[in-house]
Image 1 (spheres, rainbow, N blue to C red):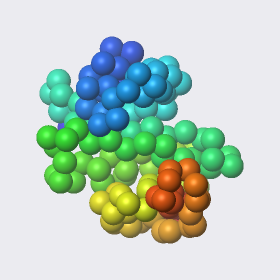
Image 2 (tube, rainbow, N blue to C red):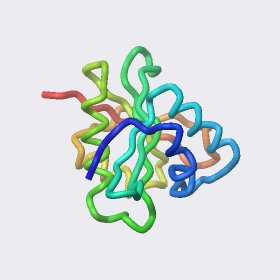
Image 3 (cartoon, rainbow, N blue to C red):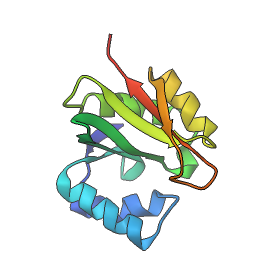
Image 4 (cartoon, helix red, strand yellow):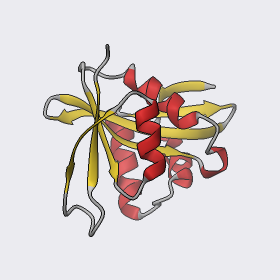
Length: 137
């Protein structure tokens, strides 16, 4: 398995595994790849997962998105991706978020060493955004 920065040639493949798969998301993926903040896990020629980490959260690293190809879920790739993204951090603390309804990601973040750090109301109707922080020991 290879972890590497995504390239322009990967954009269509990344888009194909994205469960949101909207025109807006395609444009976001394109921008993330061009900015060098999008990373992929690849096995042979298949993109298994991708993630986005930037430095725009109050001067701290922020994992903006984690996406595992649906056919490869429940195999530990989410945890592998998070651990690889941690190594890309340019700050000591790393933040991320997920919806309150997304219990699978909440469990994944706890398993990866993140701790709850608050929440934001009113981003999505009746589904608060939970904030998590990773602080290396």
